[in-house]
Image 1: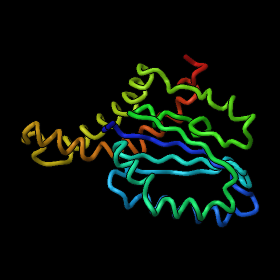
Image 2: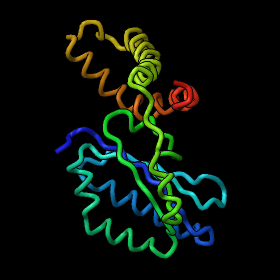
Image 3: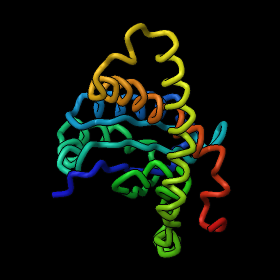
Image 4: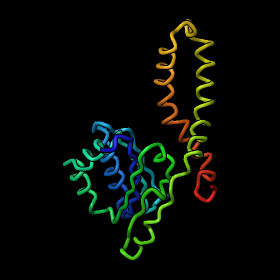
Length: 199
């Protein structure tokens, strides 16, 4: 069993006449998944106003926790509720940090017909590991530097704390900042450089 975090990227084709229903349906799915152990977050966007293409990304702590959600009765019920307006869908799984580098448009592709599906199997790979490392460092360095300067200047007794407590506090505070703000920002800025053609 794989115990690395797994990111699932899905692209769905939705009936444009039923946008309001689709919006409520997608949010319901997010709310249901969020109740399951191992759920690490999700997001969804439409490709444009009135677009039939919807992108969704969600992440679980391990294959085991992801499977628990994907095999659940709640998810089965939720998917059945979308059958009236979800015309087609396709998904892709990524393990490890590279899942966060996927372009939503390439993570999964709607399959409108069998003839089109053959060409859709050739999905671009994630950026090479060294580019992922550079990207993470570019987010981590300024965040860590700013945090260190601020706590050193404004938190009394910070320098007297044992190293283990400093590291614990730093990682607890900076991990969500990196996950939800810094890393998404850096990957957006470097999107062209991270793209396969820029290798």
